[in-house]
Image 1 (spheres, helix red, strand yellow):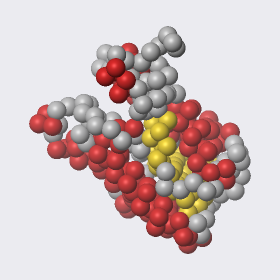
Image 2: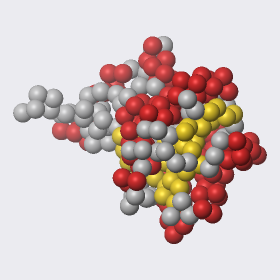
Image 3: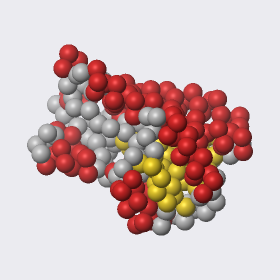
Image 4: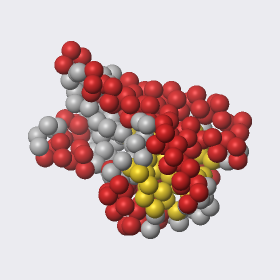
Length: 259
């Protein structure tokens, strides 16, 4: 997969899945615009991969529009957009989840994805060329106690499908990747602090392990490449089998011995 023409812009590119995507695209020959609110971390990642760092608050329309214009003017036209900016949420009960936290999650994970799609998609539609890959989540596809994060990511799936139909006639593809529990620095920190139990997460995955950020990046790069030229409007789970395993607990759990 080569990405020699145009720029790959990645929101949330300074850490976790976004940083893994930046490294993957750079390794394939792409010029990468690393976009993040954390300017110092974005610069570090950009230096590591030979890209350019840009600062933007994805929840602020003016900030993202200005960032898109700056990338176009200073770096080149964006042919691939990866929307990876997002924040996590503790699994709180509804009455314990304050509305400020709910608003903050929706602002970044849902609103931020929509704003970036429009800010970068406008030029793609005008040129009749481009591809967008949104980072959703398996929590968009199942019931979880993440009462802000899950619905926000479900909205990302819905927006992906809507924009794929809207912009398909203009030859702009829009897809999503739905990561399972991925061993990002953020999740690793929660595991180290005792907030999350890795055993609980891996026990509910058919492959019995967590996803690595580089594995998400591979799926993103595939969907953005010409190898996926006939694929639009899909939400691809990359979850080590987290979606398929839980119903087996009704029958005693996964049969790990293979018999």
